Image (tube, rainbow, N blue to C red; front, side, top):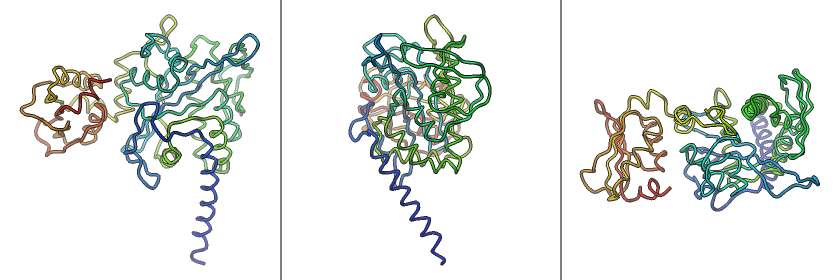
Length: 397
């Protein structure tokens, strides 16, 4: 009898896991090259354990109809959210990028960032976001126009306090919003209309705020034990509507991490910026602070008190200055450059600051290099020794 409960739990857990794995197998997943052109395999341990930071771009695409109500083969990124899973701090952070954000799209000039998907699908969208934020994007998840609605339906709808009466018809995108003011339980289609409504003075920013409200409500609901019963239905809705370059094991690892994350389930903010004619204009100074915190785990105190010295032993003139510029763009206040004293075989980050977390974040920001810890010294900081292997990662992009 002592083993009866554990064995029963294991059997039930095994059955549930079997169902989840079967449904998850229906998702269009990636097994080869990612949209970013790399696979961050070092971040995934066994069994289903996240061992390093992973950044995932969530891309929600829209649908455009022609005059005959036929869906055109042109989709834009209606929703862009960069999500960072950070095992060091056991937290998840996410930054929403408004669809009207002014951005440089490689080979297509400066325009609204939502056009990046129409020009080049997930790969170009990932590159555009990386260029805008200065953050490595490891993977992407693409959701179709109906995806979010079906996910909400899978958990039985969610309760939202609708801030005002909303009535709006978008003939080009083929949806209608008709909601009354007040707290109420909305089904998937109603939630989709609520977050897509833009017919107010705040335009796209108002839509992003409503999107945040819905996401936080859904995340809190998913944390409830009762929602476990909806697991197979939820995964089924995801499987039918999602495409990703994460493998099934990687998807499950991120899911397990999200369930176990302590404290607030998610920190969510909007890309800092200002209204401009036709665009949401990014604010570089405020973006640096958010990026340093959300995607590198660096605080204002870290950036202010830890000096960084770059020594160029690569044999490539100007590489040290390029590396220093990238470090300064993160917000480090003291960054110096000088020639190396001798040859260096492999690029190494030497940490004498006593803050290994900061040194690792800096190494990741430069493209992922080894960190060598040495005893802290008075006024000690971080030294970046650049070798030939840094050329492709720093000068190449």
